[in-house]
Figure (cartoon, rainbow, N blue to C red):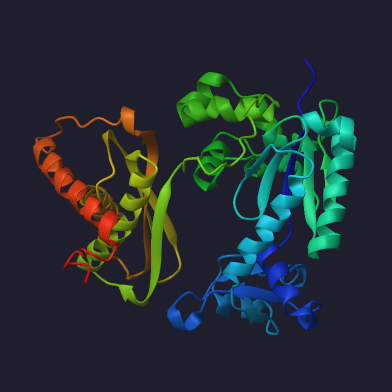
Length: 392
């Protein structure tokens, strides 16, 4: 059976590049798109190639970036325009295939296996898309071409900006194995540190590891990463449709004042949970896990997660689960600049099941009945029809 032909398209420095379309006189200067420092969002969201050369990094504080690059020009984000150009790029991709899977606002996978008769090889299609994006949108794009999604993503990261990289069956060991292990998709900071502790520093290293060692270290994800490194990834490209269901739903905020105690965090979580619950109900989904995100006043970021044997789409229960996890993991060693709550491990409605856990089942069932009634009222009279007094 012939290999698939998968592209990964990554719009280069997307936020910064789109912002420069509306500020063309700045194109040769170091620029960064930043949150509003007056409202406590003073971090780098994106930077152009010129700023990169000074060592400016995404997510660092503006004052840190300006120490490296005193002449850095900061621009406010243009969220409406970013969404508009993201959709325009996807329209260009759809000329070549209807198999387009978004991976964030600026990245997409394309399965062009069935398009080669009309448009040429995978590399030829990638170059046509690259030229279309540049000519029609004024942006540049890097494209990885490979026989699976993981290697296509690696390819788009290898040459930037405005480039096409092919990773084939014949050359993947030469191109992929020398790369750092944290270049591999799904190898985050925690996984990287664990692999480093057993001497795995490159992608090639993990292919030599014993499966039992990887399972003991990382669980089932260990052997999955090894298979990915060996090119054994058959994950399909899944086109986004209006019927597509989210894999997780989260909300977060950075306020004008630090969070200084548990009560302030609880009120925030209630607000997040209201919005999350609304989205879960719209998609007929239940969350069997929660994830909590915090950023301290010193800009240290931490995340905690926990799974539960029963699912819920009930706002108070989601808020309580997130808040209890937060209190277990954080004790206000310093104030918090931002907090976030995310519903994870989402299940279809028919798979969610309430069970008797530590005697809380009856209480939760009563809470859910009240929430079901509130949801019906809001559907009929609007989301502002009933508000929680604690949030107000």
